[in-house]
Structure formats: C-alpha cells, structure tokens
Image 1 (tube, helix red, strand yellow):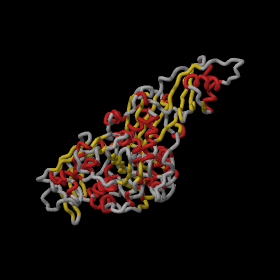
Image 2: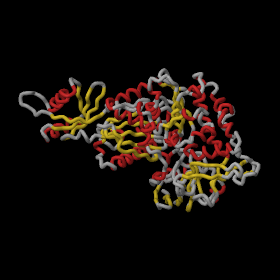
Image 3: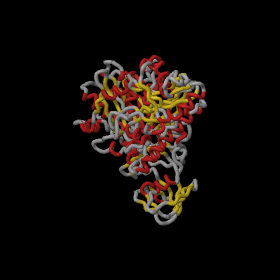
Image 4: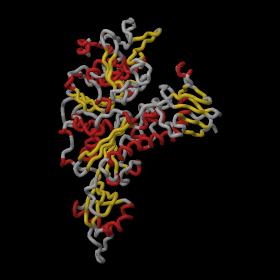
Length: 631
C-alpha cells in the first residue's frame, strides 16, 4: 500500500489505494479544516502535492493548480508514495469568545432561580447509619434506607449494583458516617454512589452548551448554586464542517460518526479539566451535569445517527433524551452522575432554544409579545407571550462564521471585525481582533463592511459594486468586480484581501433567510414589528453584533434600538438554571410542549418574503426608514 507523508510535521501513514487525501490526514491525526464536511464545495481543504500524484476530481483555480494544490476531500491516493504539504490553517487557541461567566449578568435577575428554588436533580447528603444488631433482621441496605427515611419521610429508595457492592465496607469504615449521591425523581430517591465520611460540601455541577461552532462549560458549587469558573473553546468538530448540514454529511459512515462524537466529547472534557483545575477540584466531585445543544449536536454527542434530520420529513431519533449517566456519555465527571439534556422541539429547533427561552420573559406569564433570535449557522427564532409560542428555523449557512467567503474566517486573532469606508475614495479602514495584521474577515466584519459600502454608495441595493472606476479599491474584471479590503502590504499573508461580489451575495442570502423567517412569523400573527415589546438576541455571534449595521444590512428589523436586548449565551445560562433547579427543568419541558413549530418553507408567500429580503436593506425601503434617512 502507498505511504503518504504530510509536511511540515513529517507525519507518515500507509493507506489503501483510493483513500481520500482528507481521510488519510485524519488517519494521521492531523487537524485540518473541511468546512463543507467533505462535499468538495468550499475548496478550503486544499493541500500542495510535493511528490507523487493523486487522482483529483475537483476543479481548482488555475493559480492554485499551477502550484500543485488539490482539494483534499476530492483527491484520492494512487499506487505511488505521496508527499503533500498542508498550509497553516486556523489556530483555535486564538478565538474571540464572550466571557460566559458574564452572560448571566445580561439576564434579568427576576428570571433567575431564587435560593428557595435551589433543588437540583442530583445532590450529596451526609447521614449516619446506625450499626447492625443481631435481633433486628435488617440488612445493610435496610439500615441505610431507614436512615434516609428518618430524614426525608417515608419515600421509596433504590440504588445501583455498584452501591450495593461498596456498601458493606463503606458503612463500617467510619462507624456508619457516609455521604450518598442521591437522585430525586418522581417522588423517589435513587442512590448512585456512596463514600465514607462527610463529603457533602464537595459537591459541584457543570452546565454545558454544545454549540455548532463553540462549546462552553460552567463549573457550579452546587450547595450555593454559585458559578466558580467558565470556559469556552471551539467545538473541534468544526474541522469536519462549519454548519449542521456539513456535519451530518460528514457523519455518513459509522467511523466518521464515531469521530465526531469523540471530538465533541474531548472538547467538553478538556474544558472540564480547565474549570476544575483552576480550583484544584477532583472531577469525581462533579456529580451533576446539564447539557443544552441543538438537535444535531445532541445526536452527534451521543453517537446517534443524524441522517434523518436532514431528510424529509426531518425526523430525529428523539426530541427528549432520557436521563443518562456520565459514564454512558463519556463526560469525565463522577461516572455515576445523572445528566439532563435539554429537550428539542424540531429537527432545527433544539435544546439550546428551549434553554435560551428561560432567560427571557417568554418563559413568564407576560402578555407582551416578545421575539427571541439566535443567529448562527442556523437562525432559530421564537415569538409569543403567555398564551402562545411560535418557533421556526432557517438555514443561514456558514457565511456569518466565515464560510463561503474567500477570505472568510472565524472570529480569531487577525480577523477583520469592523470596517469604515471613506465616502470620497471608497477605501477602507479596519480593525482586527488582536490589533494585528489581517488574515481574513469574520462575520461581524462582513456585516460592517457591506453596510458601510452601502451607506457610502459604493455598493447598490442589489449588492453590486460601483463599476464607475472612481474608487481605486474597486477593481472590475470583465463582468465581475471585487473590493480590495486590505492591500498586500497591509495583510498578514503579503497578498491583498479581497471581497468578491459572490462573497457579498452569500452574506445577503444569509441575512435574507433570517429576516424573511421572522418577518413571515410576524405576518402570520397579523401583527407588526412595532407590536413586539423586546427582541432578545442570543448566541456568541449575537454578542458581537453591531445592531445599527445589522439593520442597515437588513438582517434585523428597523425598530427603536431600545427594544433590542443582548442575553449572551442564553443556552449556557438556561443549562445553569436547569442544573440548580428542577423547577426550571419542569418549566423548560412545559415551554417545549407549548411551542408550535412553523415550517416556513411550506408556507405560501415565503419565497416572496425571501426574494424581497435579497436586497439592501430590502426591496421595500419603507420597512427601513432610518436607513433611508442616513443614506
């Protein structure tokens, strides 16, 4: 079999003839981005063939082909040995994340659990078990049960086999002084672990948000419901696809599904190590976990086949996952811990949304109509009040994460995040994350750029650049034109960073999908945007969104700015609420049961809404009066 050598790390792997070059890289344990999930549509997984030949089945630009680059997911190993060079890609350690421990401060304190509501699913309790007597006829478990019932009343008590095996030694070691790990469910107590002595104060839990792009973990001291530490990192699945559909496509074989599960579990466990290590906490003392994530991410976390999520009639394996143990999920905390996973409502409205709603007045008895929006690779939204909740989802695609943009990248060091355009010359001045030379542009940067080009009349409502030749930043080549955002001297790569009209079109398509979705919901309710009291904006991308520029783009409705409210990573905050309070877990289930899913693609008039939103800011300029005024 041929040997493949990957430079610059000089990693070698022997693979069968016909193996995808991308798969060979995975076998060699090389981290490498394939934003489209290996479908060959993004062209960003290119490698340079240094020695040997491959069977390439993808079209690549003449310039890259001349330098012997190939698209790795559509290039196959031939009978000869092969040496390829992998270009330096995105460094996940340089990501820009919101401070998740601060997100909870963005939520109205009135919506948070009160001290009298602290009632977790799992908790530790110290008890003293009386010694055995020759004439009482009680087993060790009988005595343990009676001591629990003396404290909590006549309640059914059960336990695991592992507890029974440990029980004789533990209760005799320190004269019956033990700490039990209890699960309280449906009026029953279930003992999942037991240890010697009083360890009731060493009781921690973790709230986990499993996002398509990022994963966040929050460590909580359970007796006080106090957040100790919070960390975020990129979901390492991003190298296998930027959005949900790309991940599902990538998971088309059992081996790849296993890989995706392994990647996200490792991401979670690495974050748990970091938050626990900060306080020198033994991970065995982390005895409770609450997880929120979209439907596809939950499937991939648990190793469930996600294929039917993307196929009509879009049916997941389950909307509500039963309680699982940490051992079953692979999450590195006390293996006997029970884990709560937020319920989903639809294939594309998941537990991240039912968790996020807990952070809004949509979870209260308020009669005011409010709108919740989570903008990412998918756009999910919920509108309603105490009488009804209507939800829908739309595929925004990976454009806001840098996908489908030639120089697009995620929000990391070197990404252009803010742009201003000179009205006279059309030239740009920009700001990068980390204040270093630009490597590319992230989603917030693209919104800022396009909005500024539109406000300064260097781009039309149709997204086409001004071809008059008055700006040295706009270059016309035949029927196409592009915008020079950064010159070769200015850029990190010593080559110009350009924005093509196709890049602009991809952003406009993404914003049109989101705007048309909540516009359609509003029309179906026979109300106006002005009738909405508060528009809650959630998610990591939303946290860095410039509201004014988003309105100019036509991504958000043109309503008074005070109606917009950031609530940060509401998925994580909602997971925290459920972690510390079963009351909130029940409230979350009730919200999920109350939500009516709207399949916007099947509603007459959707394409008209979408087409109308495919302009800047919209074909109906009266919908955006402040934008028209500022032009």
